[in-house]
Length: 114
Length: 115
Image 1 (cartoon, chains in turn yellow, orange):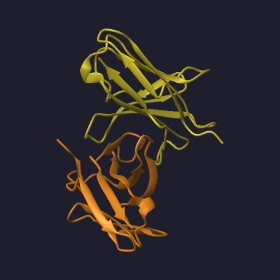
Image 2 (image 1 turned 60 degrees about the vertical axis):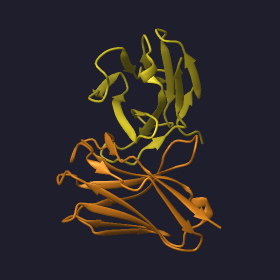
Image 3 (image 1 turned 135 degrees about the vertical axis):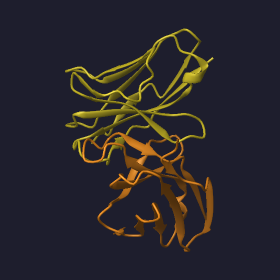
C-alpha cells in the first residue's frame, strides 16, 4: 500500500552542481505534480505531467529546471547549476482524477544548496 | 499577488474547544476550495473540500464554510484534539473547470491544540 515515494529525502549540493529528485506516484496514478515550498511560504505549483507528456509547466522557472515522467520509471525533477535560492522542500503529488485537487503528496525532498 | 490568503500564521486552542481557521481569496472565478493538513517533515494530506455551489461541507469533526460574497472560507474543527496540531493550508485550483491539480496555496496556519 505504498503512497507517493520521493527520494532522496535530503540532498545537499554545492552551487553549480546538479540536483535530481525522484518521485514514484501511487500505483495506478497517471498524473504527477511537482510543488516547491520555500521557507515560511505555501506550496507553489511547478509542473504537471502525465506519462511521457508535460501537461502544464507554467510554474517552472524558465532556466535550469526540467521535469519528466517517462513511460517506465519514476518522475524526475532536475535542477542544473543549483543556486542558494533553490534551497527548498520539493513535493511530488499524484492523482488519479485530473479534475480534482485531491492530491496525494509524498514526504518531500529537502534540497540544501551550500 | 497572493490569490489565497491565510492571515493568521498561528492559532492556539485548548483541547476540546473549537478551532476556526480562516482563508480569504481574491479571484471570484475560483469554484472549488480545499484544505490540506501538514505535519512537520511530512507531505500535505487532503482534509476536506467544498464546491462553490455549496456554503457548507461537513466531515466528522471538520466543517468548511464558504461565504462567496465575502470571498472567505473557514475550517472549523470541533472538538479540537492534540493530534490536530499541524499546519493547515487553504488551496484553490488555478484552472477552474479544467485540470485541478494546479493548486494555489495559502501560506498556512499553524494550529497548536493544548491538552
